Amino acid sequence: MAKKKKKMPGLNTSSTADISFMLLIFFLITTSMDTDMGLARRLPKPPEPDQEDATMDIKSRNILYVRLNASGELWIKDEMSSGYGNLQELRNRVKEFVKNEQNLSKLPEKHVKNIDLLGQCFVTDKHVISVQTDRGTPYNMYFQVQNELVAAYNELRNELAKQKFGREFQYLKNEEKDAIKKYYPQNISEAEPKKYGGD
Amino acid sequence: MPEMNTSSLPDLIFTILFFFMMVTTMREVTLKVKFVIPAGTELEKLEKKSVVSFIYVGPPTDNLRAQMGSSTRIQLNDRYAEAREVMDFVAAERQGMTNQAEQIISIKADQHTQMGYITDIKEVLRKSWALRINYSASRRN
Image (cartoon, rainbow over all chains, first blue to last red; front, side):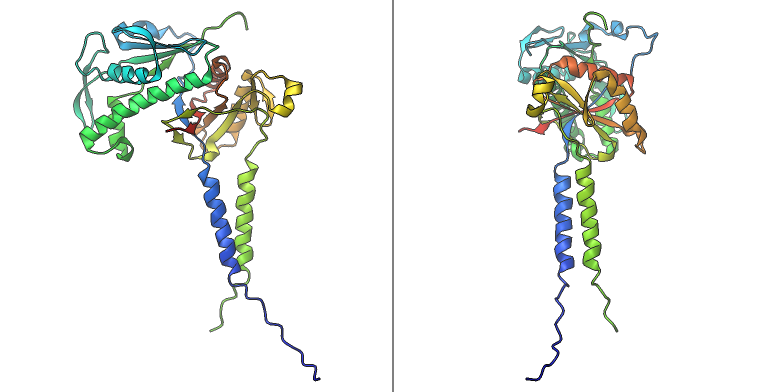
């Protein structure tokens, strides 16, 4: 038998690149999928050492108090009414409060403001929503309240965006978004937490 | 015309693959607290991961409970910390960032945490000028 040196054919590796590309794409997709989500808030600037208490100047018709006690119960108060409520009520109350559609004397005062793209507007931008919590309030309840407040603002902004620009707020251009934000600014204040006892 | 030699192409791409695998797992910290984050509807995505730092709040995990008890703890990086240490943590995190003004602090806190812990953290964050915060949450319909 003639021993003939057989030439071993090389393994076809042309598809290895495709396989590794697929792995790469898989990792790229799965790692960007689990992006963290959350409710974005902005804290007020730290108080100046010689700062006077600024809350004194706010007219009482301009303030909506939202209080959360240690058992997580919600208490809402403005000039119109006060009492315990649930989250859905809170959203409606906030919308009613910020909008003040009928220009009632017990809801935030309205005044004329010139806004780019929107022109002369009658806005309630001096309103303040004051959220007060107890040290024992469950975090979940606080979060849900914040969520409802943002939801109320988002609904108002969406309504206005549809009315003025015919699109939902999220699809607007940046200038248009800024105009809407000026019409419905988010004024949520969280009072300085009370300190109990010494440091 | 000789064909281009593509035999090193898989290696090249494998290298990129490994790079991504490394980077995405390296940012994880070992959790020493357990938490169930609240669920909300008005959430925003944390787009720029490079400017986000996390603060974890919750009771110690099951295997650490024997030593640490079951009261609420704050975790910064890989260890338990007090609320006042958040200031140093924020400063340290800010050091490595290119656009420091955009720093975001994401608070991952358990639903049942008492607000006292959160308000303490928020007060320190205010004093450290880390004003953009994010309450981490999952989506609910």
